[in-house]
Amino acid sequence: MNETEIRQIVKNQRSYFYSGATLDVEFRINALKTLKAAILKYESRINDAIQKDLGKSPFESYMCETGLVLSEISYMQKHIRSFAREKTVRTPLAQFHSRSFKKPSPYGVTLIMSPWNYPFLLTLDPLVDALAAGNTAVIKPSAYSPNTSEIMHQLISECFSKEYVTVVTGGRQENTCLLREHFDYIFFTGSQAVGKEVMRCASSHLTPVTLELGGKSPCLVEKSANIPLAAKRIVFGKYLNCGQTCVAPDYIYCDQEIKDQLIREIKRQIRLQFGTEPLQNNNYGKIINEKHFDRICGLIDVKKLVCGGRTDRSTLQIEPSVLDSVTFDDPIMQEEIFGPLLPILTYTDIDEAIARINSMSHPLALYIFTGDKSIAGKVTESCGFGGGCINDTIIHLATSEMSFGGFGESGMGGYHGKRGFDTFSHEKSIVDKKTWIDLPMRYQPYRKLNEKLIHLFLR
Image (tube, rainbow, N blue to C red; front, side):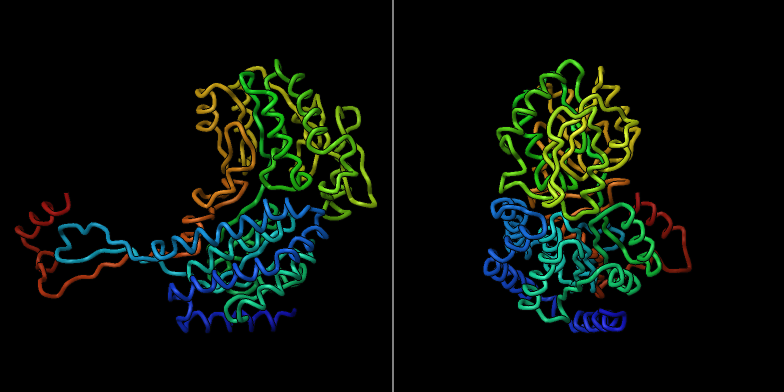
């Protein structure tokens, strides 16, 4: 799609938005119903597309993608009337007699740029929030997951007119053209490098942005933790989608005293969850493409491997792997891994661990396994991170009742549920002043009595 076509799409969506069609709450609810029905209709084809792109099983696709989108739609359908309603607030006595209220209003034409690792979830979830808030949307999925992008294009085309929602496929050229246009809001999920470019382009139009990025999310394992259960939950979270999850535990930072026991349990859990031959497991996925396959393979230090390490270039698969005796200076600790490699580092004092984590870029997620509530509280209060779990991994993003988003280098803004509705809404502050009375104190000429009244009202 060329620049002229993209410009026309944005122009048409802006005209449609200003027609007022999307402002009606019932219209938005019907749009969500239409989208939900289409997802259910296309479910098997969505699973097939995700499997072709990432090797995910239908179970994993539903658990981590399709099912979560359906859950977000259901949540919005239930709460949208409340979210969209005007909220009356207290009016100061100095503004007697008035009604003050907050009115949620859609931004207008929004751009949603999504990644390849959860191509359906991370495209449709923000779309649900954008539509619930009353916006139009231009969707730009990743070129690295072409099968899922194509099925989303078909699904959206069947549901909505292009003036309301449209999918723009393609690669960097299309991304560049889109970012030159004036959108009213941009929602981006992807790498920090591209996020910086999105923010730079958005600044030329003073367009607000939400950036969902990534980073090296630590998994602290303290010596009082339930080690077998910790290992089970860490293995699940780390190797889900072959480690290609923005909130996957990037590395383990554990107490030196329990490291050996933790490694034994992690190796045991890998066997239990993926079998003795993970590359032969039909439910174990693959790396998205050769570029990322080669990058991840380049991070494997065979001298530090204690588990896994085998690869298959023909299927773009890498075994769930564990590396021991890793330091913060090793190459694997200089970038987000985004693959099935789990380095293990140790500390001797929890305060040392907290200080080290805080010396690094703010991660998107943090996980702490401990049996000590005071330590859990200390870590979650002292460390800067987007979100996380105590004694589990990943699951904090699987609810519409809590916001999901980054912090510092891992992003800005959030979504899911009410926060998602708010993200795609501007809250207008309005005072409705009555005309039957007009207090004279604010008008010139100012008098001593007026000054006394102003001091009385505003204290």
